[in-house]
Length: 310
Image 1: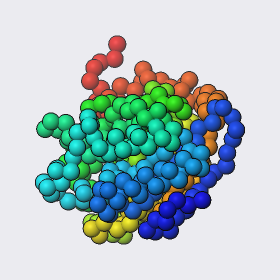
Image 2: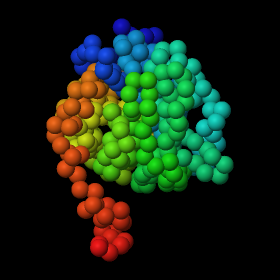
Image 3: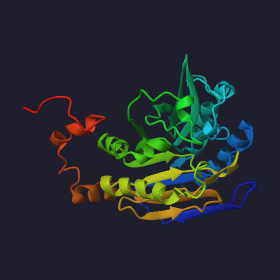
Image 4: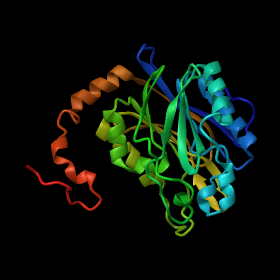
């Protein structure tokens, strides 16, 4: 069942199936990305093909998979790696692949737009059509994660994309820690939430392991929004940082239905019935019982509402 032999152990995980016409099969790709751009793209290409052969409809690679995770340090030479959205070679490559395999692929890349730089995702439909662009909204800054040096906060707002297999919402890494992002995408009609990720050890605090809270917060989004959630992370050691993989897919009840280990290279697939997920969401009543009229405080940075209640 494996494609061409990868550099590390190859695995495939599959969490059951269904024959319903409402089926949505989601896959995550997990692999090391320390090599040159061409090698990394070939690695992701190989695993996308593998997932498609297993019946995946939507296949999620990790964040910034063209190269190593460069924001570990501030280095102006890395700005040379940014590419424009229009005419992007990596997007063109995966557009052709999506069309060939008839799958949806969110492509994470370092975007340059004139003098602005973004951490972005281009969503490619199963027809090969580029459906649009999302720019990462929440930009972290800390030891080993100096993203504010490189990326402006995204200006696209939270977005969903109507693909051949359903409506998907895509956040990027640090976005996954924010319930507002997940709620907004679900309100916009997302049927599954996808988070390309690059996360690992904490250089300043080597005794801290964030793997469990990283997964828990997204599992919480799955429950609170009654929606499946998938996260794809990289693996391997880059400049002393150990990326802990653990890519997973959770169902709309928050059960982790499939998960890769901290070190294995491979794909993981899960199958969902879109009609059943929507029915379950309605049964819980979370969206029926929301009180947007009480949420003014969420629009502030300090907890003080910006206008007086009438």
